[in-house]
Image (tube, rainbow, N blue to C red; front, top):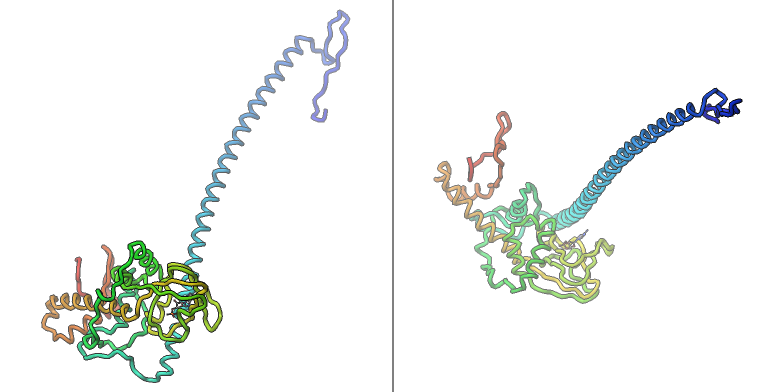
Length: 350
Ligand code: CMP
């Protein structure tokens, strides 16, 4: 036997009893057998215990693997979300670069010509600043771009009065909801106030285009922004296909928001149905909100004793410069030792 144990050799005793070679009798042999049985049993028990321990270990390892797999799945999901966000930001950046390119091209060709909308000097902020301000207002954004005229003194009193009621187009609540979601999904428009989005939805109207027809042509001025309701559109830049637009997506917003020419062409792949909003209506919605806010801020500033006797035009100029900032409980507004370039008026809180 390879493990070094020895098999006892048997021989016959003269009295007929048998004994093992090492001199053990049957009795001895019985006791030996019992011993080895006991030790075998003990060994089996030990092995069973060990097996159980190994099972438990395996179970724990399996749990650990499951936990790690869940963690990995979560991280994979987070990565996918981040890469989608990154992709969106890249698209947004590309679009803005196109807008900037358009604008620098336009300003070069215009030379030093000044913007079109000018003022009677009453001192209300111009539309670009208003759009920029409203775009920044929601979600607490701090920076924005707008290409509307740069004069701060825009007087809307010379313009024909806008009638929101006349611009309104009745539509189903379900359509309104889809339009609202489509506008809110847009990277730029989602910063508008909810009421402005709702007003835009109210004034949108249907426009259809046949297969192959251009909804938008690159380089042309923009008069509408759209939401695609039915069909498919392709976006081209210098005849190169950039992407496709699927239903309930907003497009044509850049030229409207940034007052630049169309940054790309949009062509109907098949017959499409869109909801359109006229640029003029959009601007009036922005203006309406901004004027309401201006009035609200002006009244607020008048109630501040330090500014109560300030001439109207100066007060209006301060209103133009006002920015609303929100602070959480415990947050510092000013820190001792910091350079001061802002003064604050508390509108609410302590
Ligand atoms: P606008 O420039 O007004 O007109 C063309 C529209 O095409 C533009 O607004 C955007 O809505 C859209 N557009 C431009 N570039 C892209 C792009 N890279 N991906 C998706 N849509 C785009």
